[in-house]
Length: 505
Ligand code: BES
Ligand code: MN
Ligand code: ZN
Image (cartoon, rainbow, N blue to C red):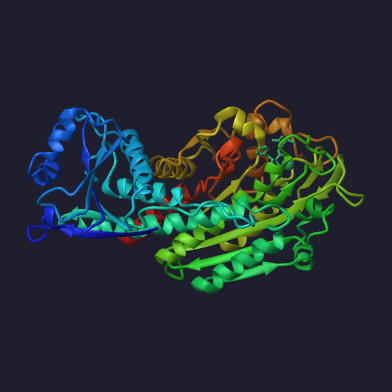
């Protein structure tokens, strides 16, 4: 699906726009807006409204053909909901209805004349992003492994946003960012949906190498020997039961000034989580192919910021391996030594995410980062706490961390890819006490997502750090099973904000 923008000015009237389908918004009160009035030469639109053929309800549509004095082949009336307030919810519902309607048309292209700048509490960029993501999502297919492909998308393939001259520049920028974001999310979804027998640690490393080649990024992939030399005893303990070689991916997008401290993203890359010797129950275990969605979100975010040429130094770090049971697997009670020197009692081999992340979090100290954000499908407990709507956001509680937390929360809110802040406090650390090592890898049932974050916290004291638990948001279960591409919108939006703050400084 292709997107573009076009300026409507005195020279190009609405009636003269040549397109397969011209989409105009209407409200529930059945009054015509300026755009619709201009098209209503012979009263066909007002007649349609009066007849009750379209309610104006957000997402409702009505197709009109051959309007006199209108160059467009079709006019699609799109309901935007109540007049008095165009809420983000109404607009999103309208965008869904729009996408559904465009998929049924016999033409290739459509032009949208929508009040992109009138959504309450949102800006033009939000509205454009919303339509682009809805459109791209509607044509997304997860059928690479099907011998009979899912039905190909039908209908409109090219969408043009019509804007005023005043909006033109902002619309262009917003569209470029939205398309890059959609591309990054598609990569994240593809990787997430790919099963464990295809998406191995080696596959993730090769994907990162290809991304680096295509977008001229720095890349390094550390192999087992190098991880041993670095003394990543915690990460390596998770790989013991697996025949797949572990990989440690380091990607660099250095778009900022060379002296600027980088932002580091660390993604959990367990390509399949059986639980190890602490084996998981069989029901829905297939979904543990998604346990590399943190890694996939780092790669997707790099795809987006590289395409945008973001003026910021960003480093992506991905520890990736399988968590398998076998005769050589780590056993409950085993004590391992992390790269930081802290010893860990592995009371449950299913709490493996923190074991691979802690060594990655120690490794990234060398970059003297401005901030580190890790992204992980870390705990089922996070789903219990927040469900599937919000990503769990964890940071310490000082001024620097409050600022980082607020930036991430805001980036989530402004993209609809929301997070909710959870505590990290010393009082929870007590649950991680071990009789035989410096720390245990589990803290019992209560506040399971918090104790997981507290475990990571012990390895992050040399820099400003936030942890995103995406266990509930990275994929959907049930009939609509599939990766969501989250939290690429949150991460991208935050990085864009970091880059623009840098540009102003
Ligand atoms: N990858 C899982 C977390 C997970 C489970 C995410 C289900 C999404 C859905 C993680 O490695 C894990 O197994 N965590 C354990 C921790 C426990 C053993 C302390 C969990 O959540 O049960
Ligand atoms: Mn696990
Ligand atoms: Zn896991």
